[in-house]
Structure formats: structure tokens, C-alpha cells
Image (tube, rainbow, N blue to C red; front, side, top):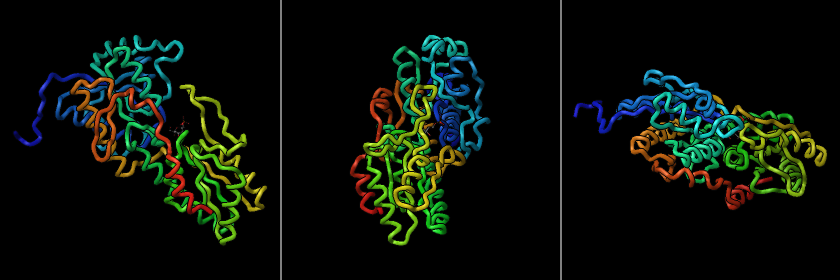
Length: 353
Ligand code: F6P
């Protein structure tokens, strides 16, 4: 066979692609992987669905040719746009409306790239007869069916660099610095960025600790002549105290996080007498170019997702197991959150203070 020749074995189909939920570095690399392999190997054609499920409900769909995904793997964000709107919201029309829009555009199926909320909706649609394949995405790395999600490594790298920078200014002023990172109910970003940057304490949702323990670590650090750096995950809560972030709920009815560092720092300052500043890294962790690791993982997820579509493995999701990409049932993918096991925090906590 001539190198580069097409190897199509079945009839080409038309596939929709959507990105839904919070954006994440690597989304564009997935889209590129799907379209390149789909076009080159299977001669499938693609439509982009704008802003996640909103585009499927409101019929906001456009042709996505191969030339539109050129050079995309290094680009942050998502060319498709995203939203947290779902087809099961009030007046959205559910699976029937999704089928209607798919039929209008002659879509044979679609690929949903998203986190837990997006994949749960994909599973519900599949249960109602909609042909869908999932690709897991989240900087939080909290999906149990895959060893890693793309975007996580980039978020950890950004957080680590930011904490390194905050440390030099904290040292200069002999201050304590409380740095808040994302992660929702999982402490993976905090744990990894905290270990990488040599934080003096890492506070995660999985392990509530008391304010006395936190201030002991702060004092011990100061007593050694260092400026304490505390990394706190947005979902962390102090044991036995109601210091929590309260920012309402998002479009999918899930609580919004953010603000725990601002709440903790005055308490630490008051109890220790050490000047304490807070910094919430927020959406910086999701912005900009993906790391090479995330580009590779995202590209592999994309090319394997179109293979799954080609095999008509509807109702499945691609996942990383060890070094291999496998297909798992969407039901399995959304059954349980992957949180930080206690022993992983314990091994880091030995070095706190
Ligand atoms: O799930 C990814 C994530 O970045 C969480 O870490 C964070 O709590 C949430 O999304 C923020 O969502 P939004 O961008 O809608 O504020």
C-alpha cells in the first residue's frame, strides 16, 4: 500500500464533536486527533457543535473540515466553545430534542469531550438511544475510570510555577502565603503542586485538619527561619469548623468553589501573629498551552475515540490504563469519583512544617 493512502473499510459517517463543562488545556488536541484520523483513515466527516450541549439543543452546528484543525494541539481553550448547559435542563427537550437536531444535520453519532457532569449526561442520552462516545477531560483528575485526564499535568505545572514565584516574595517579606488551587472535591492538584513546590502544608478535601494543626505547621516553619507556604485545595474544609466557600451553584446544579484561602489567611494571622497573605490561582490553571504530556494524551484519546466510533462502540469512553488507551462503559466511568487516598497525603504530610 502506498504510504499515506486511505485504508477505509466501511462507509463514511458524519460525526458531531462537542466540548462541555469547564475548559481544559488539551481539548483542541483531542479535536484535532479525532478529525485527522477520522478523515485520513476512515473518510468520516465532522460537524462542530458550539458550546457543548447548548449547540445540540439550540441547533448551533457547523462543518468542521480537516483544514480547520491544523496546528491545534498546542492551542489552549476549545475552538468549539463550551458551556455547562445540559439537554435535561428545564425546557431543553432532553434526548428527543438531541435526536431531532442530530437527524437534521445527518449526524450518525457524536463524541462528547467532558468531565463527570458531561459524561453522566452522555450516559443518560445513550440510555435513551443516542449514539455517543465519551472522552474524559478535567484538570481535577477525579475520574476513576482513567488513570489520568489531560489538562491535569498542565494545571499542576502552572500551579507549581506560581507557588515557586510566590515563595520568593514570601521569603523576602517573612510572610506566610496561603495558595488556593482548583480541584473541586479532589485534592490531586494541591497534592502534586504542593509536593513539587515543597509546600509546608497541603490541605485537601479528603483530609480535614484542625486550625491548631495548621498553625502548628506555620509556627514550626517560621521557627526554622522559613516563610510558610500553604497549598489549599478549593474543596478543603477545616475539621469541626464552618470555614467554607459559598458561591452558589453552577448551571448543572453543582456547588461553585473558591475562596477558602481568603477565609483561612486572616485566621492564621490572628492566631500566629505572622503576616499572612492569600492567593487564589483560579482559572489561570486552565489557561494557555498544554504541556507536551497533555498534548500526547489528548491526541491519543482523540484518535482512539474515532476508532471507537468506527467500531460503533456507542456508550463507551476512552480511558488511560497504564500506558494503554482502552474503552470502558460510560456507566463505569461516571460511577465514582477518584479522590486522593489517605496514604498519599500521609506520605507528603511527613514533611510538613
Ligand atoms: O472541574 C474543573 C474546574 O476547574 C474545577 O476545578 C473548578 O471548581 C471549576 O471547574 C470551576 O468552574 P467554572 O469555570 O465554571 O467557574
